[in-house]
Image 1 (cartoon, rainbow, N blue to C red):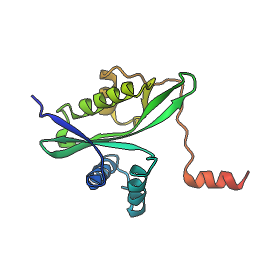
Image 2 (tube, one colour; image 1 turned 30 degrees about the vertical axis):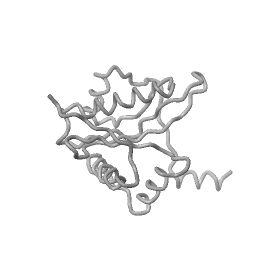
Image 3 (cartoon, one colour; image 1 turned 180 degrees about the horizontal axis):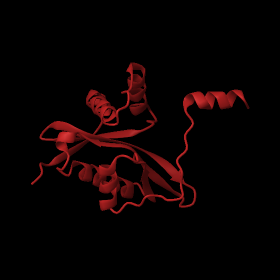
Image 4 (cartoon, rainbow, N blue to C red; image 1 turned 90 degrees about the vertical axis):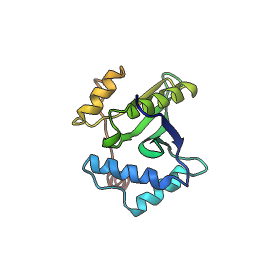
Length: 162
């Protein structure tokens, strides 16, 4: 039987733990971790009067083994908020212990409690384990929708040309 998962909202006191897990996710995705300036922005945005995101930590036997970052968007057609899942990460050594499932279930319950009409997220196309995990949960890949992005530099260039 898996250990009991404790889920706690990130606070200023456990922010360093969140940052350690974000760094672990960057390692997993083979990306550069947030630098010192980004770390300060994360802290500021997490604890602002109007936070830009919420984050929760998952603990097994008192050790942080996973985290989620979420925020709400809005569906004009549903006229309801959407819970957007930015990150769900579980340390490799804690996988196969239902940590990801229990963190995700926590978010589903939170979304329903908040009256959200849906949850949305993105998955890297090479992350077959995550894709299989979400399929097992009954989630659907959105065919016909293409994600687009403008980087900060691209936005600045566009702003200069308008």
